[in-house]
Image (cartoon, rainbow, N blue to C red; front, side):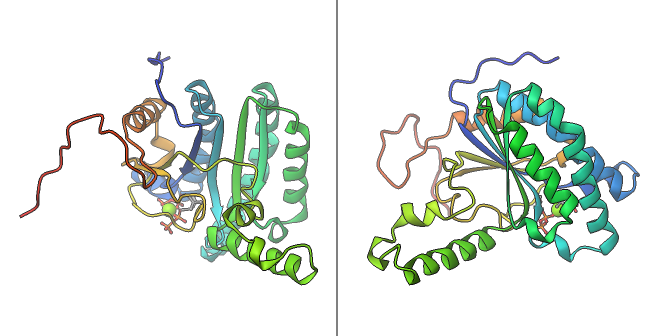
Length: 252
Ligand code: IPE
Ligand code: IPE
Ligand code: MG
């Protein structure tokens, strides 16, 4: 096992866009399903390593609102895999004192899957070592749309005055309301885009794009990403003393 030097400044909230399962399978001469299976299995290793490195909140993008547009057999396989993974991992999540929550529109999943999600949340609700959020049928636009509808209903019913709507009120209607904003988002798979993940929450999140596929994203690669994050200077639009000499030069 690799031993890690202690990280000076680990992200408290790490979000991961776990992309590249299918290309990983293709690169290894496997069927696509095997890529998804390897990707699901890989979650445990990275979740444990993240917690060991000081991450308190881990949010994983597992299935987007757009992923329904994939071929039917792939969607069916993914849904089955979600169910299997929840069954297989619950014991370990309890062992590791991990509190699990799911974000996303669950009603589109079969009731058996919804039941497993509920069971997983109920049986881990009292833990606080790691807060694991799994985004299933989640989209940042869905979340904002949903929040807008609920805010409109609250106004219509007289619980809320339009003048009271500020950023914290909007945040409190999002599925991510119990979470601090992500400090770092890692996307594996080589693409540099958000793909409709946490649109509101990412306002001042740092990004790290890993040029490897999700099942091949090792704990060493995670450590490198977190160490690089620790050296960044976050300014949140304000003015801070520079810790290093500016290194960018003028373009021609
Ligand atoms: C990520 O792997 C898993 C999901 C989006 C469900 P992909 O299946 O998107 O893999 P690539 O990006 O096509 O390689
Ligand atoms: C992002 O991956 C969503 C998940 C990892 C669940 P996609 O493969 O769906 O994203 P695009 O289509 O490449 O943007
Ligand atoms: Mg992809």
